[in-house]
Amino acid sequence: MKQPLSLRKEGAVARLRMERPEVHNAFDAALVAALTHAISGLALDASVRVLVLEGEGASFSAGADLNWMRGMAAASELDNRQDALALAKLLRTLDELPKPTIARVHGAAFGGGVGLVAACDIAIGVPAAKFGLTESKLGLLPAVISPYVVDAIGPRHARRYFASAEIFDAAQAQRMGLLHEVVDEDGLDEAIERQVGLLLKAGPIAAAAAKALVRNVASASGPVAIDTANAELIARLRVSPEGQEGIAAFLEKRKPKWCF
Image (tube, rainbow, N blue to C red; front, side, top):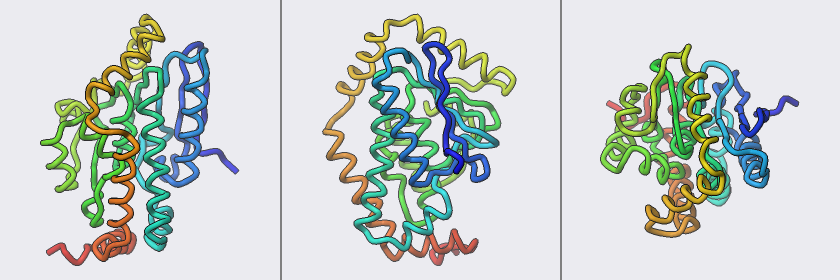
């Protein structure tokens, strides 16, 4: 069975690549678990100083896999809560990794893919990359990824894009803070390497401590409480009449009943 991601090390740099190009690197339980396991392992690897997160194929990550969505729509609220907590653990593990992280955004990122970009310390993308927090079209919300996305783009932008589900481009992503840099496709790897070089000039303990410092200053409440509340919210929404209708309409390629 093909693995959903690969990990290769180049000196002090680890490159973690999602390898589900046939579904645009969409999340399912296996990919979430594999990413969490790999990132947890890197936290213990003293030889690794920087993590680059990337995707295979046309997209960075398209968010939730359709088959996964279909299964969770039919699952209980308890199962949905556990599923949401697994994604929350992945994002928390990435966010708290005691090493600098870079998202290489070579293509589209939607839903949970935006969450991965936001949870990385640095994000560099190309002009053609598109972004979307489209959950409200399904009667849902990007609850689990919200701590990282709100932190990246700010509450005002989050209120707009969480509600409207509109697609935005790389230039807008950079203006809002989701991307730090937008570079031509031919220059993407050079920009990544330049950033890696800068990070490798910093002391590894200082780099890890810097992340913890910013997190402690910015955090208003404990991570367990945030993750639990967000997982409960998305679980309720997924099994609610609106959530069920939104998911069904999406899978059946029709407009949900609340659309005129």
